[in-house]
Length: 155
Image 1 (cartoon, rainbow, N blue to C red):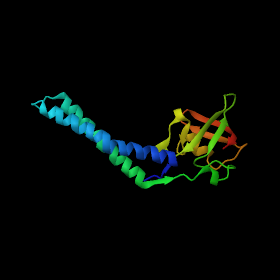
Image 2: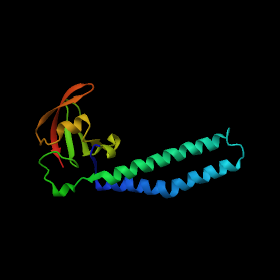
Image 3: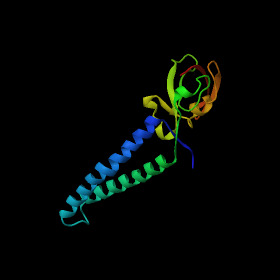
Image 4: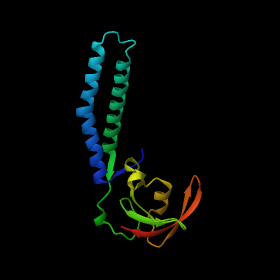
């Protein structure tokens, strides 16, 4: 099994989701199932089928989160690490050619969300720039071909 790296915030976010699923969502699904069963014939009851599918999804997600949180490795506080090289938890600004500079944070795969500026340490860019420093030009191998990026800032 691959390492599951999470920031403290990411860990808490997943823990909150797990708590919500166990308390609120499970009860909502149970209520839906109960209401659907009161409708009589279950064989052709679409609401019952939808509730059963949702129940399976919720229980699967609970198991997934349980395992993820049980095996998670918390990324240490950024302040305790030097900002001279890129590591998990680093906020990095890079520039590719004439494109605008981009800033993002390197996180574990479970927490990655490019829209929020969080990329995985297992992504092509994340993997390529780990352990490099400001000023380094790094070759990034992507499905679309190789690119060179320059590390401008590590925070």
